[in-house]
Image (cartoon, rainbow, N blue to C red):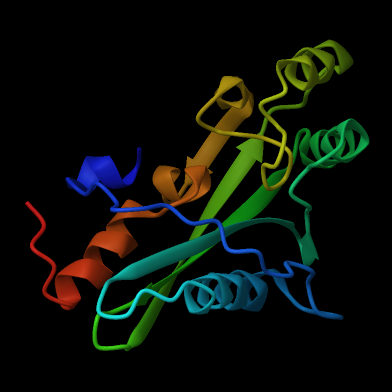
Length: 175
């Protein structure tokens, strides 16, 4: 959906099966960059472009999980409630000639203080499942966002400005 905003329809979408466990003492920025490169490297399509990305929600030096369970999602929402956090999205592009180029988008997001009823209602939607930090800004959680500085599309999961710059730099004909 985001790539369509750039006039791109992917030939295929692949979800590489890689270990996404942060390394011991790994900080959010290097983690996002490493994950994007690892995902790009895990997909082999000789002679074609491969675009990969990874979005990380960070509270200070802490990397929040991609919430898979309700308790994880609740813990993320409680931690983010009323405070500022960073969303880092690393992207990696493998060109047809095998070069690997990467960029990082960093955004600052501030949540409103969430009541227990707001948290319960959001959990009931299920849209938190598999989302970094336990929320999707392009869903009902948009109503929690008091402040955003940076890339909205990066918080959604693919920073379009940085993606377009990488593609243009490689000669991809964007409109």
